[in-house]
Image 1: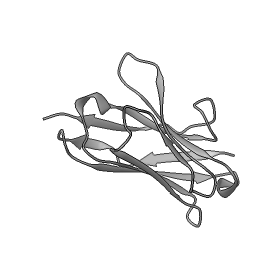
Image 2: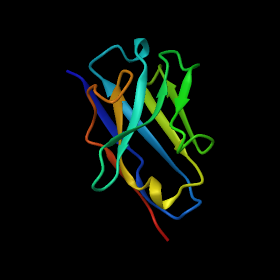
Image 3: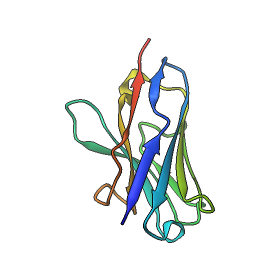
Image 4: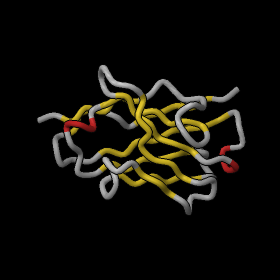
Length: 116
C-alpha cells in the first residue's frame, strides 16, 4: 500500500526558509521520479517541482525557480523540498506526489504559511 507522509511545514516569515520532507513506503521509491505540488486556498493543485529517480534531473516551476531545491535520499525513501526566500504567495498545502506530474498518489500534505 502506497503511503506518503509529508512533514516540515509551518509558519515562516517572508524571506525565511523551511525544509519539507516526505517519507515514502509501499512502492519502489528509488525507481520512480517524484513530484512536489501545492494547493493555495481557493486555487487548484499547482505543480512545483520534479526530480528524477536517481536525483540528477530536477525541474521547477518558474514561480519557485532559484528559491526552492528538490532532493531525495533513496537509502531513506525520503523526498525533500528546501524552500528559501519564502514569499506570502508560497502559502499553500504542500503535497509530495508519487511519480511525475500531479495525478499520482499523494499524502495528506503539510501546511506552509508565509506571513509576517
